[in-house]
Length: 355
Image 1: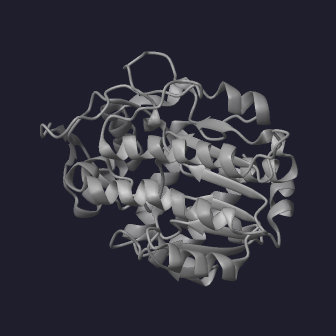
Image 2: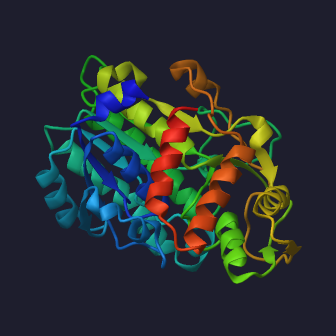
């Protein structure tokens, strides 16, 4: 903890997508570390939003803008003069990508082009990280985890657009950020994270969101695909890894690369089993019902091989899924009761870093 917080103290960080679920938690982590954070994003995507109820705007410089608007993005970027850039901004919902594929591609592909153009035309950036997803891989429903050298070809518009975002990043890395001797002039990495869960996620089509909302309304939890298997991890797990990757490649460009970020195999759960765990931790007589709605195609089985991340940085997950669920339930009950969710976030960040 001391090492990474010492590194980020006083560092200028530009974070896209800062008003979202992951972005809000990352703002809190970075600001707690003493970083000077500028966030660029649309207004919070949900109501309520973690960004608003936790008062994240008081910790950072928040710029509201569209990642598709290069002029607005570059203005905010140039004013921030960042040393480190972490790109989270995206249209992140699979089902929404079926409803509006053009917007999804514009945001997830051209948004990546725009932020990389800002980096290319700057002289201050020393580390760039593009956060994508485990869904970038051509999913063959294997029982083993995908490695970083597997073929990229997401199925649905969201997953495919993030595959494209990876390819854009690879092209810029080779075309503009590598010198004639093959050395990186600016270290660039991508991080492919599995499903994240945590307090404060209010997005549509997220199982934990559905669980907490059902608890709030004292209703049964509706589960639409209880037999799909996903790698679930607490949101702090990948965010900490993003900070580590950005730090390590800042210090030495040899760490730039492509990294899977996911839990250990024991925390790849079927959705129904995940909800069982939530129900057991929440108590109060909660239960769930299976109501498959025949929605669009989504992968049934997807798992990551994180051997590279572990070997490179000596990383292992800090919280297993049971511990993660305890933190979610703690946060959810504080929120429902009108308590101090910001203090809860600070407490959980400290507990995570000391785990």
